[in-house]
Structure formats: C-alpha cells, structure tokens
Image (cartoon, rainbow, N blue to C red; front, side, top):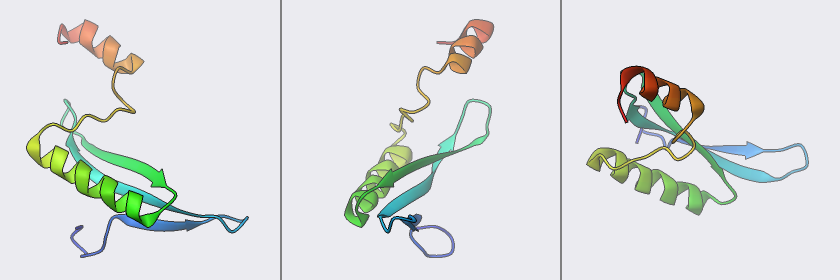
Length: 85
C-alpha cells in the first residue's frame, strides 16, 4: 500500500450516478530515471484490486511493461537517436 496506508484506488462518481474505480500506482522508473505511474479505471472495485496486485508483482519482479506507452513515437525517435532498441 502507499505510505499513508491507503489503497491507491479512488472512487469516481459521475454526474449520471455511475461509479468507477481509478488506480494510480508507481510503476518504477523510465530510462531517463523519471518516475512512472500506471493509471487505469475499472467498473468494479474487485477488478481494480486485481490490477493493483498484479501490477505490483510485475513491477517488483522486473517484468512490468506499460502497454499504453509501449512503442510510442517518442520512444522510436529516442531509439533512433541513441541506437538502443
């Protein structure tokens, strides 16, 4: 859990009364040493908790890949400039 002891999950209530759950968790550092966060919104609290648990396991084991950022144009430009894959 976060340092404050709370889950990194927030309840969202929309104007039409719909309820969703948003997770924001630390996902390690990028190549430049900047902090990365994984953010995702779910329909149920159970789904959100599963995401938090599985993402934490992947980050701690070094296998986490942020799918929303994989293969972005800026990554491709950086790869060409530095010669890294």
